[in-house]
Picture 1: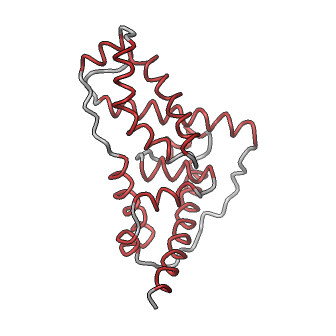
Picture 2 (picture 1 turned 120 degrees about the vertical axis):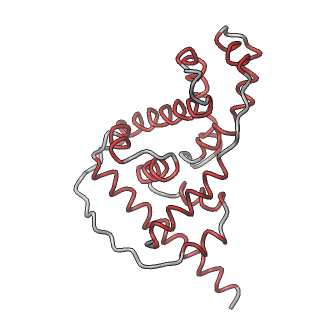
Picture 3 (picture 1 turned 60 degrees about the vertical axis):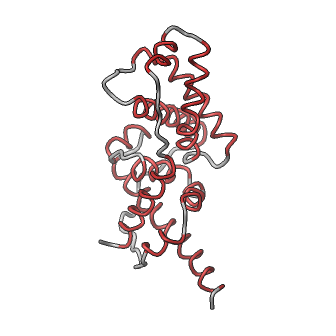
Length: 209
């Protein structure tokens, strides 16, 4: 296994462990939300808050902005709850609505600011490094902070591909970019993450010298 795949696996194991908060949703709460009952809506919000915030924090640099996304996402969950199919876990459906909301917001910002040029060099040499050691030294919060420091588009692609499990075709459609551009951003994010991890590990090594 190459070192760059090791960082993918390390990030995936650590981040999914940190954001995987089991949701025990009583079917009666869902039924109450379908009837627009305020009490059921408040209960669903409290039960969903941790899981939804964990997702939003991977796409925003600060908690305030993440909570804005969370509230927008929860509003969409409530307005679309009549489309929820009982044969799939509510958590999976709510996660998909949340990610779609995040991507919609990102598209608005992207259209307001700039267009991305799709002439990238897809060959990015990566130096070898043992990321198993990095996985042992860094917890989920450390990795999440590093991901938040990635450039916005690379951050989105990294999260969607590594953590949320979308393929490059799906990511391209969601972000209005080509598959090649999605692959470039993932490669760029991996390289940047590797460099950030290497710097921190060098500092740690220096302390013990």
